[in-house]
Length: 98
Figure 1: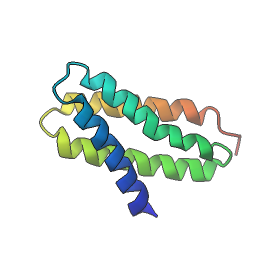
Figure 2: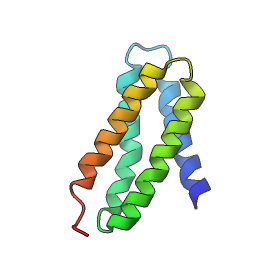
Figure 3: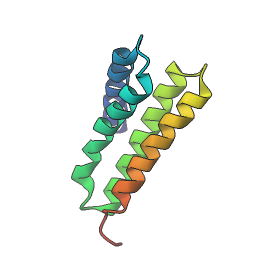
Figure 4: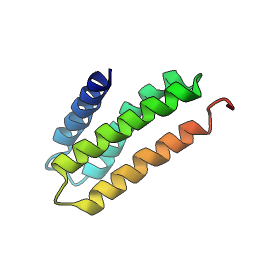
């Protein structure tokens, strides 16, 4: 299960990365791509426990991609991780109470 989610997230982020190559808008392109990836989390908003587990898997997969492709630019990685975590935090506010 983790492997499938991890591979799916890696593939999606890599696709957005390759689209962004050679453009000045790579931060914007990657941020939109990441939001698209994490929008899959919307289907888990009915169950807090599953949502939290899935969001951790996606964050870990994203961190791995950024480590792989942006090891030379830690500031960029930090900005992208901030965007992704802020997006998840926004979704978390929509979760039902425990």
